[in-house]
Image (cartoon, rainbow, N blue to C red):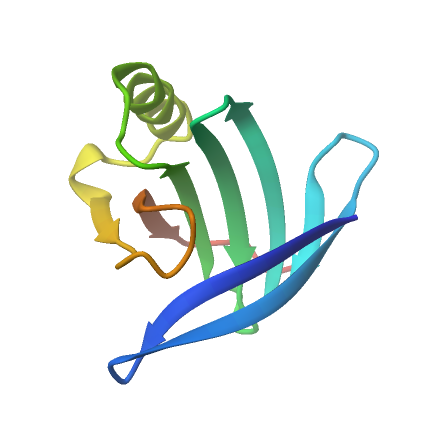
Length: 122
C-alpha cells in the first residue's frame, strides 16, 4: 500500500487530498482519485522522485502524466531521467509544466508533463 497526500491549489487556496494506492502484481499502484489511476515510481534518489501515472476518468478520458518531485533544486540527473520517461511515454515536451509548491511541503519544486489521449471503451 502507498499513502499519498496531494497538495492542490483550488480557488487560490492550498488543499490536501489523501489517496491510497494498492500495490499490484507488476509493482505499480492502483488508486481511485478523479477516476481510475495506475501509478509507478520510475526512479528514486535521495533528492528526487520520477513518476508515471495514467488516469482514466468516469467519461473514459485517458490522461498520461510523468512527474519529477525534487528538493530543493532540480539536479541535472533528475531532469534527464524525467525527460527520458516523458519521451518514453509519448508525451510531447511542450506539455511540461513547472509548478512551484510555495514550500507547502518538503518537496519544493514539481515538474509535470501530461497529455490526454482518446481511449477505446469496451
